[in-house]
Length: 187
Image (cartoon, rainbow, N blue to C red; front, side, top):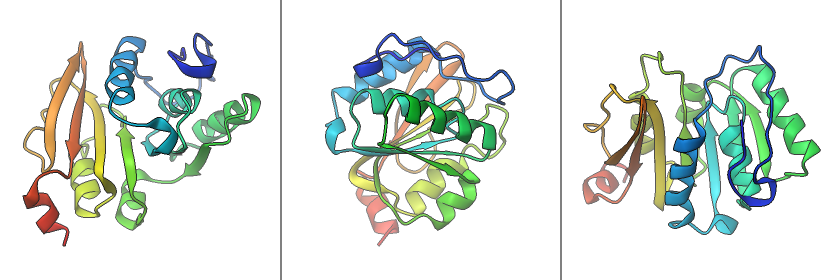
């Protein structure tokens, strides 16, 4: 995995081979960060990185000066790897949390400007992610949820859906709380 921008730009990381992961491709990650970097002031953002895996996304955020990012994964090896990288490269804004994503989303009360989810592509309940984020009101008023998923999976019928960006076999679906209908469901 390679860091695309920020203070660690160009640095390669070789995560342990035994981690159950499928990292976001460099091309897709670069496109995503071009969108986000032109939309958000990273120095003021709180980010939640769900299914963090190798930490490719949370480390990229930290490298680019994000205020705070919570990396959540249920695999202890993934969390240990992310912690070791954060310590080695002095990235104190990365907080790690070993937890089941769906249980966490049910119980969470913190609001985030950005939530990124990169679940395993064979996970049958991927559509529950935007449902839980919207239902539990986990985004700030200008916040965005991005779900990475296989291109064949369509999430455009989910509440809060705004757009999809396709990068080969992977797609990013974007969700937010702009619709008055969504706000009313959360009041």
